Length: 178
Image 1 (cartoon, rainbow, N blue to C red):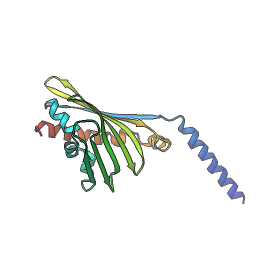
Image 2: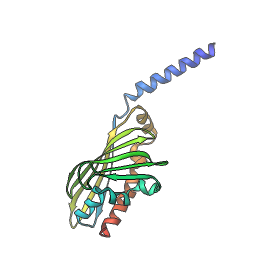
Image 3: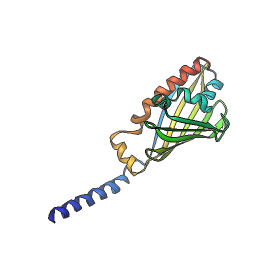
Image 4: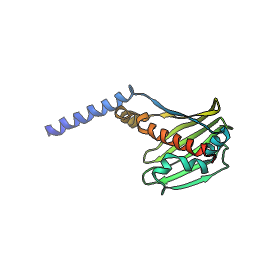
């Protein structure tokens, strides 16, 4: 009986530390990467804002090409939708919220499985000499569990490399003019 009381006290203390400690951890995150692409802005924009083209350079589509995908809505316009469901990549969708042609694509990224979360994802295209600089940014709010996960591995560490690989693929595709 004494063992159970001690165990219960330990569990309660850990739960309190978990909950109270989460109030002191960052509430949100931002991850971004930038690359310079030697291609016209309209080609880069199409490769981002048309999910049929986005899918061809998307690093997570390359990770699990067998995932089921569906595209709907009019490409390069608000409400254009890309949905996926896979064993490795889980399930979710990306939906275009707003666009500024050849300059900005703002999307809602929602993961449904394995954990539900929502993030704002933006692609900004800005002229840089004869080229264009593309900045990919994702930001969102942490829930209590992701706050603690990020104590050990930051969101930047978790997805930064995927952003870099994706931007390299976008650069390669766009510079080929496709």
